[in-house]
Amino acid sequence: MDSFEFKGFITKENAKDYFSSVKTIKKIRSSSIFLIFILAMLTTLLIIINSQSGKFLHLIIAAVLFLLILIVYAVFMPHLLCWSYFKNQRAMFNTNQMKNHTVFADKVYINSGENRTVIEYAQIKSIVDNKSVIALLMGSNTGIIVPKNNIIDAGIQDFIPFIENKTNAKCKKNKGFSAVLPVSVLLALVLCFAVIHSASNFTVNGIENFYNRDRIYYDIDLDELGDYTDIDYQYSQKTHMLLFPSRSSVLDLTYEEEEYKKQLEQIESAYTFLNEPIKDEDLYLISQNEFTIGNWDFKVCLNNEYLDFYYPKDFRMIGFNDTENRIAYLDFYDSDLDCVDEDMTKFVDEYFNYNFD
Image 1 (tube, rainbow, N blue to C red):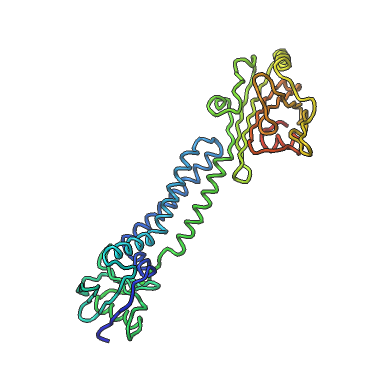
Image 2: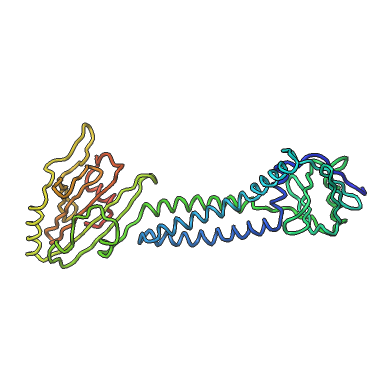
């Protein structure tokens, strides 16, 4: 055939397929995919470090937010351009439907209302075969949309050799991002889950963190805890079902025997302990007021003039190890915890994750 005629309407699907073929869009999307994987690897590294130190939470959140923006940008760019395209058509022609009447003869004749545009075949640099359109690209940003279902009295497979011959360009299938983008989206979801987990589950060790992090209670002053020979501090945050965070801390001090006895006397005068479990109807708020783990004997503290506990959401326990002359202060906070029905040894193991054996 010496000529082909296309007449009908350009749909949003046609425009989306066309924009997915534009070179500039493909380059930007390819760059976005590359940045997504680089950023994903860096974020994963930060998550690993954060789980050990808890220092990079804000940086991780910022990285994942940027990652999500890149993915949304890469996935929906053709949709956004399609929306902009039809918005401009409505503004120019006061219609939601973009009419298409294009004739391919000795030249390309594009009729739009009363306007007629003539394009030389030499201006067409590449041909891209999409699902619903043939995209004839004249540059990195410009081209002609040729809807396949608009062809009159011919088959689209007849048109492709014709346009290839006229332009001296080879028609290429649009590979698109059908596989890469879903993987990127899945990666983003996994990283979001990892960020939530990292933000909510970490443990930091070392006495230097005692003053550097938010403490559950601020009544303890290290200078008032006597002449200890060794000291350790652990702060933990843990989330259940990704929504309910709990915080715990352990301040572990070791003394010489005489100093240990002095500290026991000071604790006896400063603290009062529960003399029985706390029960609310059928639920235990505190299942055991005293319990033992290895060489440690633990007691649950009662409210005093400095501390107002709200069992089981926040309270303190003190552990005594007469064998090694050690005293441990265990603080706990979880605004969503309603009961502690389990054995307190299991509770300490689950929420404090500290080696008391």
